[in-house]
Image (cartoon, rainbow, N blue to C red; front, side, top):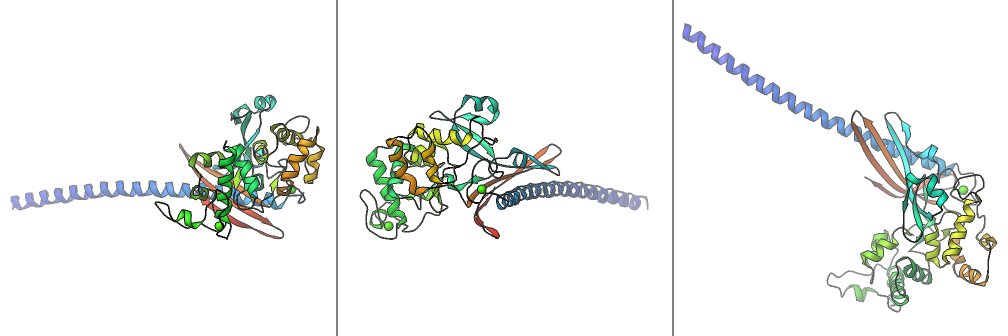
Length: 350
Ligand SMILES: [Ca+2]
Ligand SMILES: [Ca+2]
């Protein structure tokens, strides 16, 4: 009888220890899953913050009071109050983009924290708001002579090489199979080690340039911040940076004068004395304006505008919880439409 009781006790102890191990294992597993679930939940919250930033930008673009022109002193373009670390619940929303601008000492001093050195007497500035896609050169639309000078000046190519790549870009996007001087059509691309056809259609991403004859990653890296595939192919002189204006064929002095005119007397962006071009012809009012400037301007006047309907929104949602900060980023390109929601041309979530 005693030995039977002893066996039951031992059995009970075994069952108990088994149950304990099971319970500990289960709780460990569940707490891991709970941690994971809360992480996903926080990520989702950061995502919705980023998405709210996109909606906020769309509202601001629709509220534009000056449809005849679009400039950098409008609320959507550069407004720290609206777009820099806007608190929402336990998080923040930031909309930002980088712009190259003239390296005025005064600006560098006042906004030192946000300004980094860049090549060629220019500096990179962070703006808080929405980027005008028309501040860039549309590789689908601009004529070959503009592509050529852009390659020469922005990618530091000699005239011959720039002309050949410009022709190859045009051959890539045009629907015919006629080879331009130094350019290429399918017979060239099909003869490559890894053969492919010539697109004979518009670029759908700027990276597609890397498929074009003569293009290298190095040339592309120099070009990528001044080009786009969106819009009608007109560059907005109210939002374009001086580097891009130089890349279009204006002298550096002329390009800088355009940007300085926009800043007004105080050389500060977004202040009351900012100037706006309401027509492209007003570029002639920037003195001193001589034959040389006139010739340069006539060369590119056809690809200039003072407004835009295509914008790039780069929105960050930051959700803070205890010791964790979770970031989500949404980049999208929208086309503003009259009396209708904007058309989404591009959307990427990170
Ligand atoms: Ca406007
Ligand atoms: Ca072609």
